[in-house]
Image (tube, rainbow, N blue to C red; front, side, top):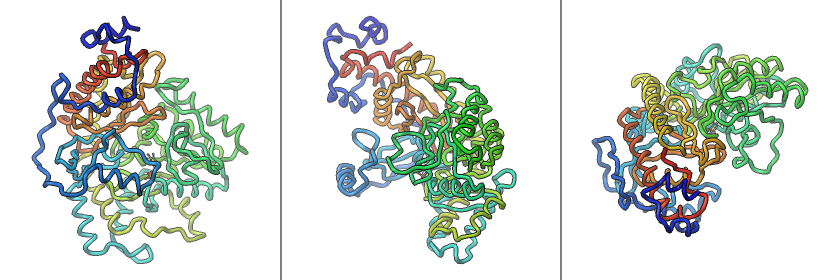
Length: 501
Ligand SMILES: Cc1ncc(COP(=O)(O)O)c(C=O)c1O
């Protein structure tokens, strides 16, 4: 081990190294060590002609204290010293001190057009001044116009829109519709998927960290067609056999439906193996079920090659659910389905107070217009392609990078301490992420094992941003590996993660 570490980090290695043991304080100091103290020069940020006005509100410590006292104890925050972000402009965020950050996370793949995009903001402000709320019980042009525009983006007979307030609510509605339409209860979802945190959606979600020990009925979790860790590599139809087996052995032979993301977002930007969805859709339909595409993360042009994630798999779902990118950050979700399926709700009342209210509807319409006008799908395709290329080149250099994957601006980088064993490099992922934040770049983290970078910036991200991102991530590797080594890697078994090859 010592010899291997010497080879990996010859400059940082000292004769004393192997005598030390890890301490959590040492590790914490490594993760938060100010960049300025390190030898690697700070990479440059692309120029941006904007200086935020001085911020005079409460500071991070105060907010954190209130959050700990008054807010949901189940939420965690990124970074040892959490960021107080007070302003956003396109692909940049500003903290309380006016420091600019390159946002490569987009509020979890939500900021589609760019932070506070002027056309989206104008639409929201103008509508808010005119009429903020009336309910669906009255007519209003905003919701009708937006529904028509959204339906025009859908293939086939997917023409009826239900507006909701979130992705969870959209998926709950979709699952209920599938059950009502088919008269069956059994649903199949995929392991490692995330669909929300209410009753039916928590049942469909298949990651233990998001599941509480409450009644969750009628969902079977199929094998994940995971192209990196899965048993059958990229052979989609082989994974699809598991769905057939679930139908045969675990149900009456009739099912309500199947729900899946085309690219699992929370699950670590995992694109389903090619050929999987067509095979599964066929099996589900034979068993009388409906196919639901959860487009909460992969919709609204993010994948670049297509407007919707499912289109890359050459399938047409029966129900499509969406949220996040639909509103550029305003609370909004939707379900789109066929007139025939939508009709199942007509035997009762189904409405919610806020879904598609005038302010959210104009925001959604403005998002669609901006995506079109600024060619954001094309941009996601071009810039995403370049981003993947740059990240793949890093894989040749750093053994810690096990996989680079995704589509458009929905990209994941999986970190492993051993490429062969694919051992998750959870601590190292956190360390590099912390370093990147110190240098001014924000990214997300995900995957069941917490060892995947989620890179989901606003779709206005540029090639220059990718260039800067690349320099920042390389620099973070250097900084992290050298200070990790100097301060906390002086313990057995932890040093081989960031091996430079
Ligand atoms: C694929 C997917 N579906 C559903 C949801 C739930 O959406 P929301 O948080 O708006 O309820 C999420 C949230 O991350 C998601 O990623």
